[in-house]
Length: 255
Image 1: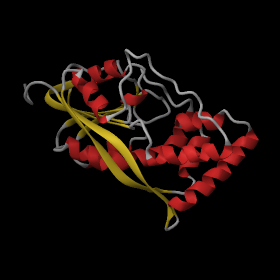
Image 2 (image 1 turned 135 degrees about the vertical axis):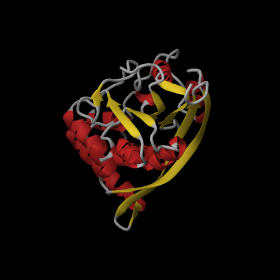
Image 3 (image 1 turned 45 degrees about the vertical axis):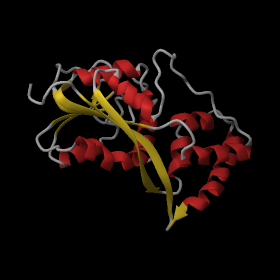
């Protein structure tokens, strides 16, 4: 199973904030999934349904599932997909596997429901100093706040949040795998990242939520100061980075 968003408020906040950031990877995902016309596609961890709508718009037959009942889709989650072996031509998991309690079991389940010759396509946020994480670190440092301890998986369940790590994760499920970095320019409302953090989303959200009111106010002021350099034509603008992996199931399509 995967961890949910902690209630309707967080699901709505995610849709209004982080979902827009994640959607920046959709062009790369759609490119990796094509051709889509007439294909059976499973969107795992569909969130607010943006990617599913784009897939349908490209001519695919889409089933969208999500473990959080406040998100769009069915209330099921990995690694217990209620589908037969080989039920889908394509399976996509956008920023999902890095949130699973057992990433290997989750990817194996996605591979199970993928038809011979079909593809599993996944994106993850990379570990390390991305532009977004660097910005948040400067905000925390300016107020003297330490990040909340992260929730780490046991070593035998975890995987490296890198190009090599995602490729090895897909290959471990018996897929012919490759992975590469992707990047895009994110544009959105100036308060977007703060609103997500204030709603408790992600690691920075856990850190913000753990602070007393006066410290949260100082963090908000530090955020506003920090993002001034990232505002272009009235919008927050920065380079976002992710890792995209593609795993091809053994056999030929139609077997």
